[in-house]
Length: 267
Image (cartoon, rainbow, N blue to C red):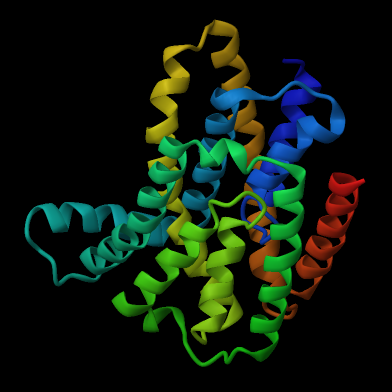
């Protein structure tokens, strides 16, 4: 892979991972629309490692609390705030892991990597986000996050495995549907990405590393580094903008891109 190809991939992944516009959809579209060769599984895993580092750094207090909670759960201290957060994140990840395995084993994950599928999901879920964001209450805060809501958000996150849906977009839509304010809903969505990315990395990383050579590992390291920087900047800007801006700008982008993709796909 050329340095330019790696740089474009890293920037695209870094910008789109946490915005509700579907990073996986953009990564699938990149080789289709630009003529670049498909980046392969190793690079996909690498750029997700970069975004994982970004969200852990940005939410370092919550991340440290969650990792501490894992130790508390193992040692039987299940009533601590740390253990509670860790348990919420574990439960939220179960649906996406189960659904992901089903898609991989049945081959549906490869069959859905098409412009038409991404166009419809980009458009459809964008409109769902708009209507729920506009109509939804903003009465719940991060402190209100409970197990019942976690199960529902886990199902929203599982649906996002359909290319073009957006993991962050689906969970954010779920939080707005449940009545969380925009900032705290996004906070929950970002924290839920941590175990999800780790699970995905474990599932796909071993297979990718088994066939990787020195050049591939070098490209992966470069991609992860640039993605980390792009994702951290994007995440910081998005969380600041949510203090005064709704999700409508992202919806407009999704609808426009979805319409273009459907025109290309059916023409």
